[in-house]
Length: 142
Image 1 (cartoon, rainbow, N blue to C red):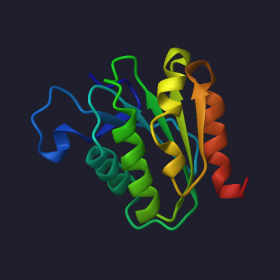
Image 2 (tube, rainbow, N blue to C red):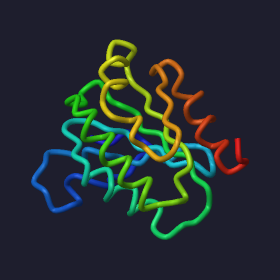
Image 3 (cartoon, rainbow, N blue to C red):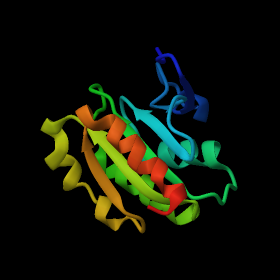
């Protein structure tokens, strides 16, 4: 079930038989940023499809935040691969933030985010607002 202020972007909408969407857009993210909530099993193509649906052909500098839900299956390598591909396809993406439980930080660090052509920063879930603000600063060139 989606939380208030979120909409489905990938997973079930991509023609796959899943109980619920794996990526949901967080509607109350700051202007000039895109925030997606990841749950369940997220594959690289889910990430690419969600970002394409949200950004289209936009050329405006955008910061992306991926918020990892507690029920995320832990395929951080798939997430990293999808984010890297999307960053290459969308020059508007200029920075990426990943928000996760502190207990999963090491797993996230070792998942290939360093292959991204744009800066990736990890945030603890307690600092989700900080991640959103950091991503929103992309438009200002910060």
